[in-house]
Length: 619
Image (cartoon, rainbow, N blue to C red; front, side, top):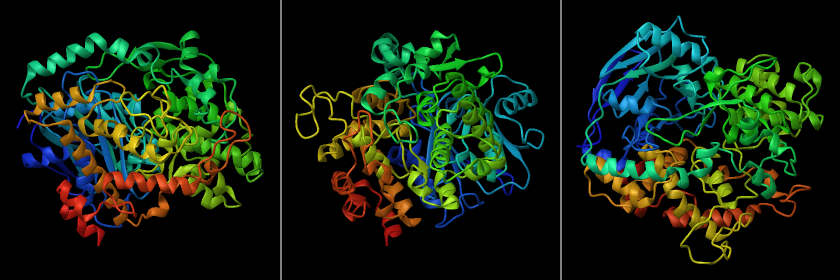
């Protein structure tokens, strides 16, 4: 077998043991890597109703099929577990260099099980595994912990995947940090790591598994090296969020806890403004990628911002900026740094703050509740203070350390109307009223509201026939929630899901043909794009089965009621998501996937995907 090491590592923290095992080749071809390895492991090894923060939950680190190959974007790895935030299938991805280094160290995935009685970290050195004491670094912020581990092990070449104090304190949206400034942010995987008393996993390796056709891999890499600057122009220029001003015009930019309306100050929080003011000191990248989309920001003065933690991406800019009504770019850069230091997800943290602000403005919360914070929309100082309190689980911040769903349940008094989440996972920064297909994906996705696997309705989809939901110029009719959107989410969304099985970055514009050529070149399998798509469908089906086993039903495939009405002003003032129409489009999407009306794979679909064994969980 080419392109893989052929080995998984199982780390038993309860018994302090590391053991490797070798899955058969057909397993690799069936599940590819990344999300595929994760969902199979969770469904077959984590028992029904297991406590997400208990020792029976398992944490899976899985590079993809292409992770570590010398190709632009091949630096991603996936991490998954039963989510403490939702109780459903939990998964997130991170870039950087850690995933590629794990491949170089001899493993295609790590399954962490059990729980340690005392803080530990795992050290993997070119195949050798050791569980080491972490009592001296427990409590340290991410950058300090990274430095301490490298000092202890005597090498700067080591790559780390770490949690900060947020994960240690079991904040339910805690993240896992690769190489300090790259984050697997969603679904609370850092809390799972913290519950196991696992501070981090440090890796170092000497060589990649051999590709079947190295010349073809290099040919593809050289092609992207010559074309990336035009194919990914906006990311090359400023990184993510280059079109944020246009989002304000179209209504896609979330404003004041998704209430909608204009945000004329958008230019003051844009990436272009960060460059103009000199806050971006340099650009960084991930393994083998020439795009260098990572903004590294630094600020000196009364509100210092530490460059080690990178800089805010689009999701963070909107979460702490427009969605909190804040137009102070330094404040939102500081909020990003706080989240990175403590290891918490910026999307969930930002939505928690915007939810608290709306409750405050509506009189549901008062200064007596907030510990004296004046949590009006637009109060940058209060926003930063609130983020720190959440990240430290201090005072009023303790209420929001488990996300908006649980916070609203505790607050009551009608606050549930303003808690913006799906299945307990806070919405990312794309408006479902503006992007119907994205909203559809939010509603049905197994992890809850996920933007990385959805499609952006305003993108040009070339070659598609004109019809319902398609403009004359080939663009999708953005606010329109049509049946065609269900087909487009399936067809155009498939490559956006596939990258999480292959270990590729969605920002690198590989074509479908190039992706299948890359997999063939690396593995030697005569694999078509259609076969790769079947692997993705297999993973999607198993994720729905996992959720069904854990008690989720069709009623959980719902958008917040806020989106069933229109904003009072702005470009979406005549746009709303009709719940009956959403149900109709969901059913069309299920039919396209070969699922039944309950959103579960049929017996025939399971047979087609080779997962008949999963039917036992549907009985």
